[in-house]
Length: 113
Ligand SMILES: [Zn+2]
Image (cartoon, rainbow, N blue to C red; front, side, top):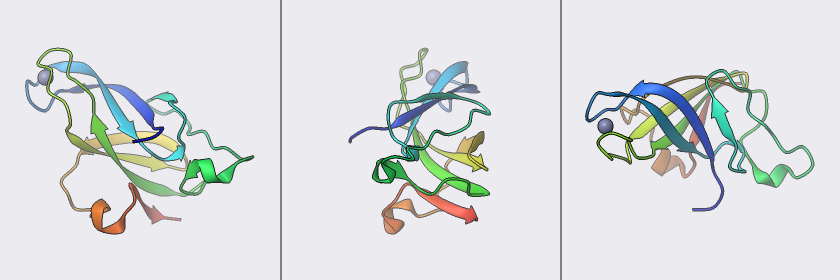
């Protein structure tokens, strides 16, 4: 799997509906186990660009993410989309599969440069 980052925010569990401290794993920007909250700015490694996924400063990027365990019902593994505007983690939504990350062989799409 390698290094990834996590995004922590309050959201309803998709299975039990309880408002939980949702944790999403994703790979974008510098992948180094960073723990982000809503409206945080992504961190990039300027010294070693190969440790980054993507390009800094894109206007709008959508990232594939996966949920960790719900603390109430223990459900995990739901697919989410994270929306990033100008490197700010702005919002999430359940992944409706409208982006084919598998075919693109990467975990993000740049929607606006
Ligand atoms: Zn749950």
